Length: 573
Image 1: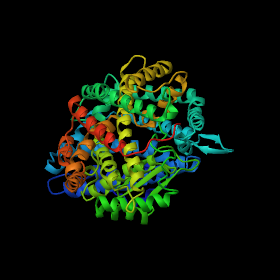
Image 2 (image 1 turned 90 degrees about the vertical axis):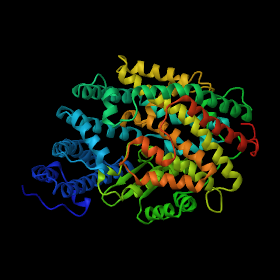
Image 3 (image 1 turned 120 degrees about the vertical axis):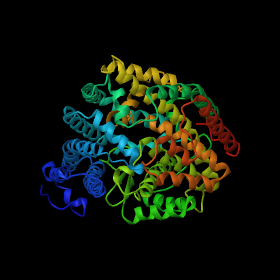
Image 4 (image 1 turned 90 degrees about the horizontal axis):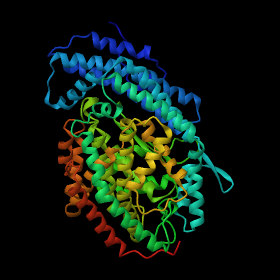
């Protein structure tokens, strides 16, 4: 079958429809696969996937940067709801041909396991279902990306309220908290109806594939070969037993230092150790310049890779109206480059977000050395290990003149991050438990039942905060969690990876150079090893047990106590 020669750039596919791309897959499907031709066939298929996925990534990036543009939304949806679902269908067909050929290369073993799983669970009836889900995800981004509040006489996107949550004036903090929650409360019915449709589609897709529910479907769909739903439940219990009490102790100390009778949700971001919040940078250019020096200190190669991103304009960091919320790192597979997107407003959280996304970026640089696209990207559990470990490995280098803080301010930033590690583990457990409940409970399709279950789970994992009279604001928190809407069950990975990252950090306390070296060795393996082996290479163990988590929590609390003794007490809030 004749088909055009593969283009040299994804730009050739920027305006393409599926009919323009299908002939390339048809030609691959028509080619014979034998011992002599398999390698060249795989290279051609990989190159095709690189070109199309990069064109799709560029369309997605353009839309998240400007969710108000109907043209950019249409381009993004053309890829996400038309091209990529049909491409997945054709890719499964090609994978079936490869499996039937008997191809067996050791360096491709994990990819072949993924291919076999994709073949087993693929159903043609699910192609339009997942296409509709992409459209609904774009609608969620459009709704949330357009949210603004009136603050100090002007309309501001929600991320720009974050600095006011750190104000020493408790009244300002409360006003900012309520203002940030209000748009989600105003849109709750619309978002609940949107999720109702997503829920129904996901459950139908699971049943089409022969599964009882979407939770049981998602484990093979996400290639979770090395742990089970029961392991995630063990993680929930371990966090409840070891992390939740530690968080309660942290929050009690926060309440005491702030001189408050009770801790309210608007008291969680203010710095209890200093009267003025840390402002590590004024604008994105300053953040980028200082971050470059931090990465140089972690490893010179990482600094050079980050400079490449600066030079090639692969960073969009500042909060603006119309930008989608959150942050991400997207890999552009054809050119072997990552792109970082976030909504920075000048806070310590922004620094940690950049360190996190840079960890993904360094992973993309390292794994691009592997020849085929499927070998480069491991499961999210390993991808998040790369990002969360970078947060911890880079933190010792945040102080001036190399980084973003004075020595004293760096201590404040470090304690804020360590406290956030524990708070995040409790949050992760509640989000994953919530998603498990949604898709396995007979009441998961009921909006009111979902809201009640969220409140129950938050009370289980989040202790030490007085939420009286704020049920509506507390419920609004899950509507803000875009993963639940757009990337279902993508959250336990953060918890698994955090446990691994804390082990790498523990190693770095004794051998910082060796810990960074092992970390980078793991990044270079991409997806060519099993998840336990990737963790072992990085110097960690894949684990869900309470004893290991308890030991790591104790290490974090010990470090916090050491730093706390060196910090001043803040003025009463």
